[in-house]
Image (cartoon, rainbow, N blue to C red; front, side, top):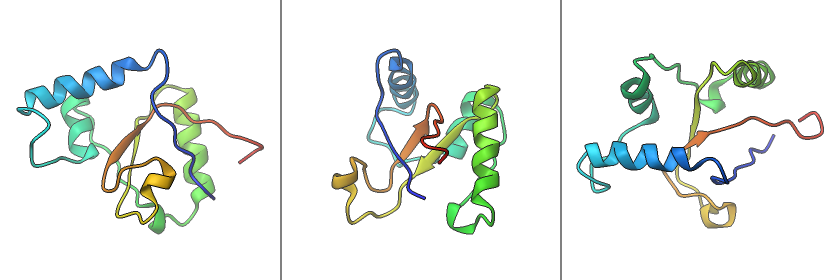
Length: 109
């Protein structure tokens, strides 16, 4: 039940460019912050559905739904971190949001 995280790879530069353009529109990186629901709405006019993993009753059902959406190219997912005592060890930043670019199952997990 552990999440695996990675970073942008070849061919995924568009994510960084889109973020940079958006933040330029918000007067730079020194702004009060945002949340991914607001950001997705601004980019797509789509009303996002928010899920708190700690409150989801059937994680397998949610996972299957996201994997199916990814295969059909009709899902956008982001994951946010809270306060993490081992953020550096995990290669993450505390209280930061990450776009999920692709879903992969490893050994049926």
